[in-house]
Length: 228
Image 1: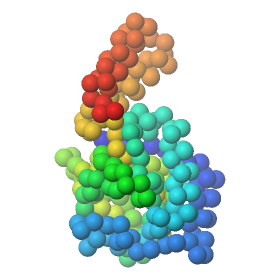
Image 2: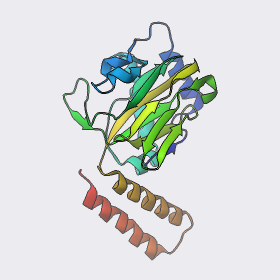
Image 3: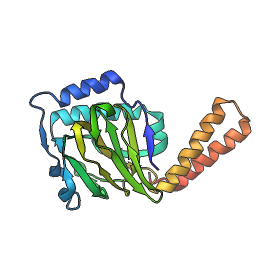
Image 4: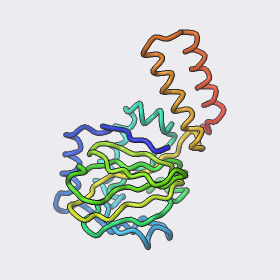
């Protein structure tokens, strides 16, 4: 499932993050520092040192926003979220086709996280740069995402994806991965559709007994598929 989640961060918060990230002395490093053997040869960008205080502070801010976002919770069913990282693409930079590694070691914890869902939070307005589209491939073809600042896109981490070369301006974003309570993407999609339908029926005060039955179906499926 590829899904846009709008307004994860409000405009003023995005501006504040951007100011911090682009301030003189911000700890930018070569993006290949955290790339695996598959990604390193095709990765050309820069990113904030993930062990820095700045990365941890701004990452915690994003995690707090995600915890309060019902659409994110419904779509992803998060079990654990990798600490958000930050990258920038300037003219000529790009990230070639790759698949995200299946397991990530969470820095400083020794804990491992299975990457079920990949996420990109856009921090630059689309009119501020040319190129830089996130291109995700699935059985239905290639899908392009270049969203408003503050919007998030999620997609299966198993997807082949790339970032098109930037030709003007700078693309600034946060990226991270989620280990879901439900490993299978098709099962997560089904639960998401069912949850949204129940919410719409609740909003219209439809038949109470039918809503109760559908809610029970949702939770019984989640109980069956959840790895918690």
